[in-house]
Image (cartoon, rainbow, N blue to C red; front, side, top):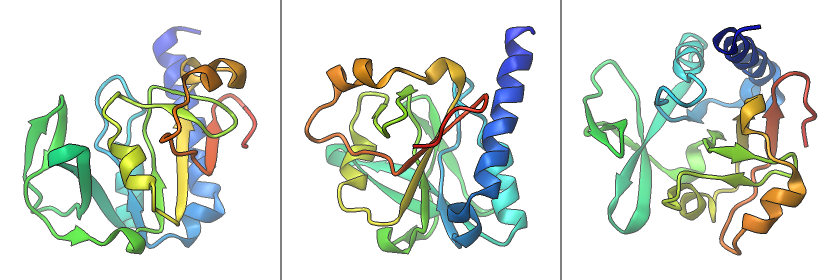
Amino acid sequence: MPIQIKKKVNQQNLIEQLFLSEQWNNADIIGVTISSPMELDTDVIIKRAQSDGKKVVIPRTLPKRQMEFVELTDKTEFEVKFHIDEPVNGTVIVKHNINLMLVPGVAFSENGYRIGFGGGYYDRYLADFENDTISLCLDEQRIPTEIINQYIDPFDIKIKQVLMSQGGRND
């Protein structure tokens, strides 16, 4: 199977797992990034959330490697920061009101740890985030637990659930 088709099938598998999850179905407000071309495409997730009447919130970076999440609407305006679209306007949603956070990353293990993009923004944000966190892991992003454990720092925040493509386990 060509790589692009395999990636599309894996993405669809992950998205279906997400949509069937209790966390998704119970969430009214979902935090998600606007994906870059190298990441799992979040456009389908965003559109489904909005069509289901869920509020979608997206991150905006702040000084000192902090971030906040703002509501995504048809009036949201963007600028490119760190090679991704970031909102310049919008209503900030208080952290504890976000029911489900979809956490991006470069690589994931089944034990819930991830390697991010190097800024530590999500680890700082999630340090006191008490609601559900899910990461969606494509086959090429999966790293064995014993390897990822070598890269875990004390400030790294464990994701509550990692959905794995191709029938991978959910830990």
